[in-house]
Image: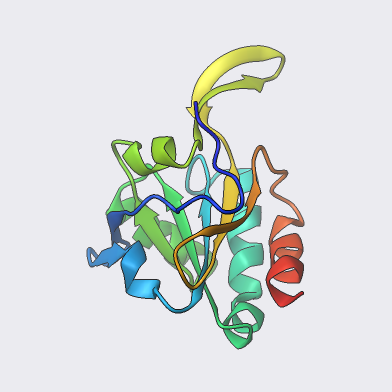
Length: 154
């Protein structure tokens, strides 16, 4: 599994958001984007992470940054997840995990001491030109949004 590093070109993607609208990475050319990959809607860690990103959306917006969450969940699950927790960020559906794989956010990982294949909780800051500015792999959900906000505000 190839990991992306600062300076790499961010893999292009087009995915459907929670409303069924197509969202392309190229839609954000000229501004920064935070793309974060998470395992599953409405699970404890993923809920904490999504809520914290959502709570900080105004600050991200003031910094000129859009935040996109991506999981393999369906559009319908994303809608329900957003409604249940009052989330305001866009959640994109990657059911075939192709975008996750392109970003190195899907593959072998350790879980409870065992090797498993799954989503690797990862976050990327993509600059105005579509290049990777910063990466985090295997992140801890709680408090991560604040770290990302600090990095984009620096």
